[in-house]
Length: 423
Length: 177
Image 1 (cartoon, one colour):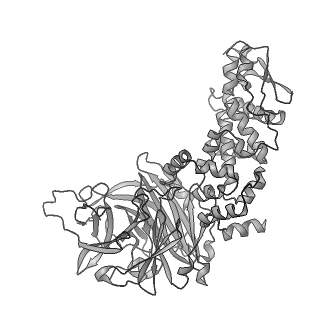
Image 2 (image 1 turned 90 degrees about the vertical axis):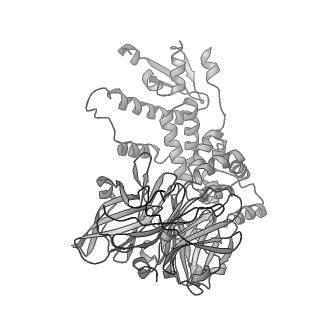
Image 3 (image 1 turned 90 degrees about the horizontal axis):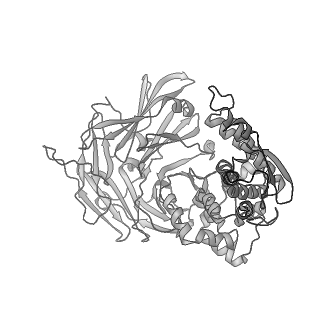
């Protein structure tokens, strides 16, 4: 009879010996694919069975395809003594923050966390004015010498929208680090390659007056140099050094946006406050009701995304956070800063606000293809005693050492760094 | 479908021999049973040989609920219809208190009976049980035996030492409970 053939007994297991690795493997795979990387790494040490399951090539390939694209938020919490300082990481697949202890070699430094990409975490050392790159997978540390003619830089000279760390090429355990800054009054692109352990620097070329060639090209990195009232100076550059077109100067004007203040903390007491957050050729404008309405705090009422126009000469409106979502996430704040990153068609926006000494982190993401905004609720990470020394959005963490090109954005820890422009 | 067929009863026998009589519409929530019932076997007791009675009870509860929400969905203003949020809350409540071995059996059952909604609930629950846990906690929860030598375990940990770092706030939370 048909029934008997179909009701195949899968297992005569009783409840006690039906351990979860006896589940059908496609089911187990579905479950594991939804776990964050630290969870998978811990599963490896549970038992031989689980270790071989998550070490299988087919599993790793499928997992990494997802995992590499996962955006992560990393925070650096400074503590005293320095050995208690921690990097905290969170992805939407996590349930809690993971903690990464900083290597022993870091203990003597006064560190600020600049940015991260793949396995690499880049810190600025305030004592020496140089940079330190920490490789999470290898647990190694690499000193990055001061950038050529600029010499040692204090941590306050770095601006998060002006730099980018790029892990890769795949399997190479190498990274390159790009930043844009003014040198001899001209926008320059500085590039460090860990493979050659050397800096190169080039002046960015101004667009010809006819503006024939579009300066924002697909796949190029866009770095901020200066954001003034009315006009920004940015540099676009090829992420790879080999065969790169020269870096180009972009001078988008804020015509459509009105008077724009510099990037940084909202301050002053005008009725409307605006915070501009830059990253990957996009700009987020956070408009807040100013003043003393909410016990001395402000409440943002509008968050808009603007993107560089194709010719890099202006900004065009992209989207705004739906009002309903804004109502759910908004909180009073006194100071706010943000990070912005675009990757794989997803825009990640992190707004970090402070109200009466307590930090609040809001993580919103926007799918450029489907137009959907989502809010990723974050578990508590001890924001009350948070001595923030850097926050970054990154991606590229995976089981294998093969990365595509991730990008990241950095935020300055010191208040003056957030409002100040480079000297 | 006519009313008379909707009221038709179906008998299911669990692996431990208990027989459950349910409405055909309830049984048909399980795709595997639906396929069988569409062949002519109305009088048979269908043996569900890999599902024990307590698990089958839970599965039937789920199926009954699905029939309840879908039965009046053709009428406007269905009082049983759930919003996305209510659906989530219902799912969480349904899975509340389900321990790891029951969960594994539920997963096997819903996989075998092909009940997508229940399978998703089970996977969600399983993911939330593993997230943030440390190896010994996982072993304890799922009765997994540690078959590594201490040296092997140490080596695997050292390869990815950062993933084993305890979150100080996680500790605080669990110790305060």
